[in-house]
Image 1 (cartoon, helix red, strand yellow):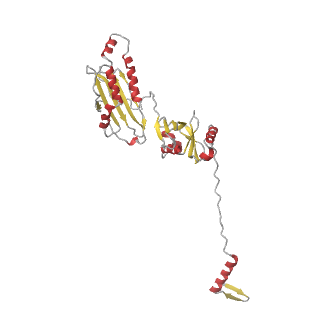
Image 2 (cartoon, rainbow, N blue to C red):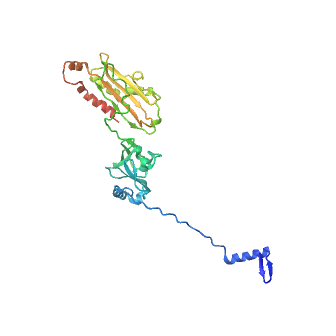
Image 3 (cartoon, rainbow, N blue to C red):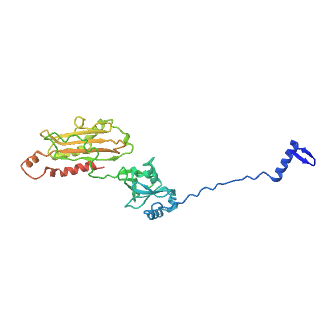
Length: 347
């Protein structure tokens, strides 16, 4: 390092240079560090009910009644469409993460904590708009004698309920049976009604659709197990009662696997069985078929068991009709119809 000294130049040695730098550091101290903090953009606040003015006031009322921000936190975003209704997710407070739901003709319902987490488990891997696709949207939240029931509707599984038997118990989902006269899928996939002259006078067909998560991977592998269970089923007992009421003393119904040749449907997703109780003349008096169709995950989403009793009139009723009497044979079967339907629809 050169140092000007009048008309000459003096070069500092390494030792002198070291003393110079050390002295200057001790006098002035090390350079002060500079810290630069970049301001983060402010997150816009979203109000409860924001995004749907039709529900905003009711959302705010339900939110306040449930404990407000301390219990439920603040909205994660605006109100969004969810199936036939709307929902708004909340960050969660003392009651845990939560969401507000609303469906037309129902008051808003709030799911929080374990109830909300259980609801999400039924919609795994779904986007928020698809949460109610299967299990449905909550439309009522009721507690009686410590048992809490959250009623659901508008889902692919039909009407259902989230049930907690006692506080702190685990939640479970239960379907709510509903009866309608809508023709069932594959309604024609039954065997023929009967040969000429043996057609039944009354046919009762009942199909049930049971939402069953994971059933699309099932296959029919042991047809003999279902066949062995059918003689002890309630349908078999109803058949015997019908036969006895018609004066037919018959042994235990004998169920057989209905082959494709005889009109049955047998595949990896279907199984079909038939049982015949003969009259005294050997003609079929009471016939029943049972069918099981497993879901394929696309067209058929539910396991579908079905039953179909066929009832022939008594010989005395045939004679009355041949003589021109107007009493229809069906009238004597009204009580039988009630018994069969109660059996088929009992939980």
